[in-house]
Image 1 (cartoon, one colour):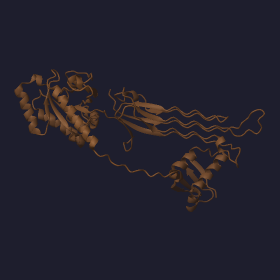
Image 2: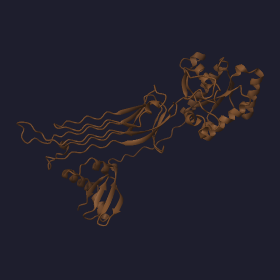
Image 3: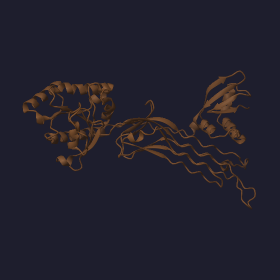
Amino acid sequence: MFCDELKIKVIAGKGGDGCVSFRREKFVPKGGPDGGDGGNGGNIIIKVNTNHNTLNHLAHKKVYKAKDGAPGKGKNMHGKNGEDLVIEAPRGTVVFNEDKSVLYADLKKTDQKTTIAKGGKGGLGNARFVSSTHQAPKFAENGEPGEEKDILLELKLVADVGLIGLPSAGKSTLISVISNAKPKIAAYHFTTLSPNLGVVNMSKFGGSENDSFIVADIPGLIEGASKGKGLGHQFLRHISRTKLIVHIIDGSLEDISINYNTIQKELKKFDKNLAKKEQIIVINKIDILSAEEIKEKVVKLKNTSKKLNIFTISAVTHEGIQPLLFTIYKKLMEIKKKETLEIPKIEEIPILKPHLEKTTFKIDKIIRKKDRKIFRITGKRIEQIAIMTDIKNPEGLERMYHYLNRMGIQKAVEKEGAQSGDIIRIKDKDIPYRK
């Protein structure tokens, strides 16, 4: 089964906890704090592997989790960082969030990789909290949880040319003749159940050794494909990346203009931009037609649109294939040249605002109860501090009060009428308000 869309959950590794430890050695009196930091959690990375053509190899698992960082140890020993988890995907994979509102990555290049979920930061050991006024801290940070995301992987094949047409038009036969692809070929509809990719080497057809392009056979297009009939809905998305469409029509059919219009309507319904892509029309199977019949069919298509670029070929006898390939290659060069000449959009230069994110917070909600108020605080930096701080430890609680005061949260809740007995809630931590 061909898999080109997959939902998975990715969980980056948790950071290791910092260590509370004091140096204890014979003949070394009053040994100081020597608790080491925890290791960072492993990241989730998605990387292109050109040996994969589908997402089948990822379908057996729903959750992918990276390794956690190891906790710190005494003698200032740093915990081991968690190993990154590398998920390999085919070239052309697009990574979205679950509802496709956020694009995380568009993997078009060979060996391209991107970090999808970042591992948690390792907690600091008690040796890090030594100061002139606090020389024996009995507190260390907890490790930060890694990012957790539900993502959607969608495969859109990366090819220069897309071969489209109704079932049994001869697409698979043509791609097997012009490229190194070896598709299954049989005399019945829907023989091809997954797209085939092949490299066309123009030197085999009288061109230069350096000239080549990638072609994809897109199966399953029938009337109603844009609504999910046949296999069309599954494969129409693959055409969107192609630079040029080659529409193969079965020349043995009675009225080929009907077949041409059927495919054009489906392209428009699925995506209006697809129908606007440059196309080359190919009438196949001319080996079983007379010269008069071929001429008649070309005229019928020309009546549909005089702009059509029509070729007649036989994929079986190879008649007409050489001029078709040279035209395809010439068109591709024109399209690529046009893309190169297009002026790129000038992106705005970002204005760096150091530490701004670390100082922002918001009183998200005030929950009023009979005897007290609960102030729910949100903000990336203060949430990170709360997660990594053990407020059951008296020194940890003092640390939280230090940050509440330093970041202005204390003053903000006082302006909202905070009184003794009220609660400041950050993530799942409830901190008693104090003046």
